Amino acid sequence: MNASSPVAGSLLAVGASLLWTLAPFLFASAVRNLGAFRVNPLRLAGASIVLSGMAAVYALFRPDILHSLTAPSAVWLGMSGIAGLVIGDAFYLTSLGLLGPRRTLMILVLAPVVSALVARGWLGETISLRGVVGMTLTLTALAAATMQEHRTGPSGEPGAFSLKGLGIALLAVLFHGSAAVLTRKAFLSNASLDPALATAVRVCASALAIWIVAAARGQIPSIVSGLTDRHALARLGQATLLGPVLGMICYVSAFKTAPAGIVSLLSSLSPVLIIPITAWRYHERLKVYALVCMALAVAGVCLVMLR
Image (cartoon, rainbow, N blue to C red; front, side, top):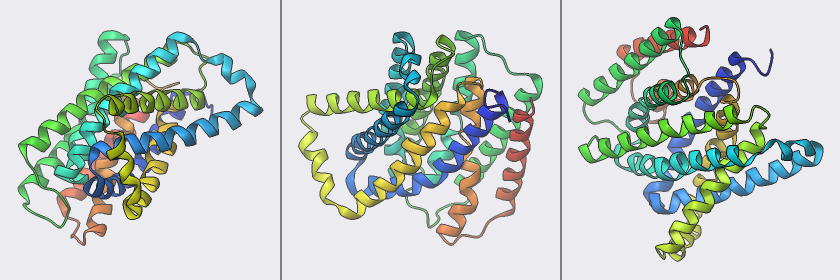
């Protein structure tokens, strides 16, 4: 398959979803023990170290990638990282602790709507009729699953539905959706931009921003104290490898060839993938409505990818 084709970008976005499906379970555990204000800086610091090392090794074999980064693309990537990984993820991690992994991810599925609308108005990106039908089908299926989940009452999953948690999750949607468009803008402004280098720049800029804010608030001693919790730190390390490292590489790379709305949608499939995992993890019966919603969502994704 041609690595520069839109289908390749779509597959990379789906790969990000697969990796991001498992990470919330680990992040939720770390948030409950350490708090979101510690988890976000620590995971970004860890991810930036790993990605910087990977980019340095990559540059040894391909020195030309360093010339692919221009000042405008670096600015767009930095803005994207701050909007998504700093502000958006701060709301996201907080909602994980309040709502639990499944409820949070089901609300975050609205981020592609924000991405598609902003990309259309700012970047002029359009989606074919088939793609629109596919997006609508997927979002409708996930919305139905969300509403049914709220009506089913308490379960063994941590967290509980609340208006506060809902509001925080919706703020995460707004910033995540906008961040996707900013990432796409970086690639549109520089077609030769290397995805591996772009990922490292995006995450490192986010890590730098969040630690500057933490220093200004005098929070660094409190954040560093979280390193003494070995159990939470182990979960955080595992989640960071899955999410901000491997998942982020797939996610950022997808924007090189696929529109922002499509990448945002296909990288937001965790609510579908997480249904059977949650049922297994918390010993719940997989209900018929969940299977129907999953089937409809997968059909919608197929329409999007075949656009």
